Length: 439
Image 1 (cartoon, rainbow, N blue to C red):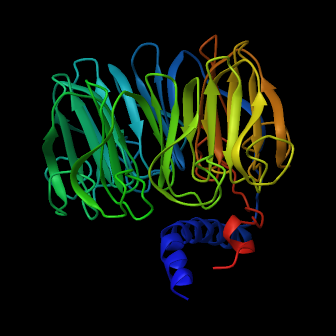
Image 2: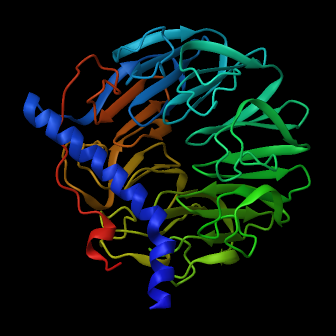
Image 3: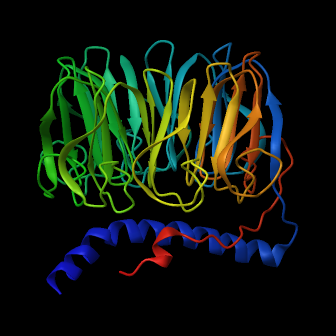
């Protein structure tokens, strides 16, 4: 009985998130059923030219062109497009110039301009814009100067300045800002120095310092901080040394060390850690050797090794691992060769091979794979050639080709593809992983 109660508590957060996502799809379906006219785009559609960067959000998209101009389209309920309105846009709208980087969250956006100034707009319920208020903004607001990079969580924001100092603001319910409190902050607060990389996720934060040490703070209910406990941390805690990069999934963390070894910890109920079990791990566990890059998703993980081989493990009920089955894998399985980059979406995967070909597999209910169907795929399917960049949203995909052309496909109910063809869609009944499991 005690064990059952512990298991229920451990899985409660994941269940709540899953149920919330399903509720969104169900409500959307009911509304659209009443309105009628449902469809979606199964194959890539050309959107615009001269694009150097793209970021697909949940229901909206941002792109930077070669001249540094920033463009936006899709859902705009909270002003997250930054065009001065709350009207959804079905074609790209120019937002600002001289932009070097853009970071897309669920409801708020951060952009760094060429002069290193940081700008924000969209939702600010918890002060996540950092402008000293909790007022939503539908146009860009200047937040701070001398910013090198940013990472956005669901409702909090982290920024590294050019001097290596780390700053935080927004929701702090679980201590994810790292300032020693659980008080929300609506202006940037200095957290630590000598930081080179930061990773803000839903309720916790990870940072790598110049000496290669990895630090963590915030929510720790599944052991995702990796400090050997399930205790939330309000200040940074050192986890391990010699770390070069991290990827954070839903309640779990993957890290690559200088020697190419891959380590994992946190939630493991679908085998997403890759250690051969479904046991949550509260401290780092060694998984693979010779790893070049890793991408942690909601429930599955993909890694590229130094020889270019792609490996997968974790939840697989939609075929998102690409191993020809829908069987969850608790240890890494080899999927493809000659892979350059991999991106993990909500139940699906996109990979670019060294020859520039783009491959897709997994869930395809919105046509997000781009293969001309809405059939789930459990093995990689070739989508298009000459691709340099791919970005995955919740149900739509964006890709940039060698010539700078931007292509889009998948869900388009808010105009997030940007092709001007606003189309409502009726999501099919999706079998989520928790529905077939006892709790």
